[in-house]
Length: 342
Image (cartoon, rainbow, N blue to C red; front, side, top):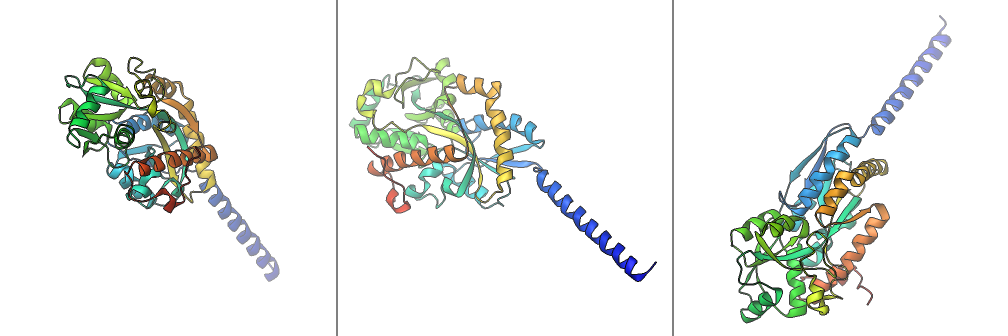
């Protein structure tokens, strides 16, 4: 064999090996996910976010071919979990499962992060908060509660899921419209709030309708009003707060909570697409659709730009509402959060 021929063969073999290596790399990239995925739920077990995510995940993981390992990391209105996921690699293997709260972190001084630092996989559902008291509470109507709160400023205890959570926002709205103040007591989400209320450790709280429905129907809790402009089909016997006082109409235009799944900004687009496709299958599954309807949740199914636009609009409405009610540490203007058009 001549040296020229041997050299040519060596070059061809080398090129073939390089090509094979590149092909292997491509295959590996296309194979996402190659290992199980971590899903960090920003709230405690048994709450609204937890229940929605544990309904979606088993369906989505079948599409992905790997397990989505769920863990609860509550605290600081979800800011602990949000920071944790942000501190991980932007590779799609760490999902943030949270509610609307990061859109308020900056004005509340909880975190520098917001959903601008993440990419949405799916905004699944939106819902309302219902004001509830223990079943044998002396407050049989919202009016009873408000009269007692006005007569005893800052004395009645209201359970909150941290600064910026829906019970906190509910208290801010009541203060803005009615001028009442409560004594806030913090818990790690809807589940612990229910336990505290059942144990008569609180006078009142606001719960996600889905988390409260069974207790209201069983007579374990008394519902006074839904923080919305119309009644919720899951608990049609409970009045919308605007039915009791039309002054809430403008305040509640963009109120309520939403639950979704996010990944850190910088995650590859093909990974985002694969996760989004899997979660959309889960969202459209009859089991999840039935769950949402049964628990009084409004189906959203928003992804990509639609999800970002919705989150930005919600932030504009609620950040300025809380700021004008005196519940914020910083002005939304500082963070370039536009004032909503009137």
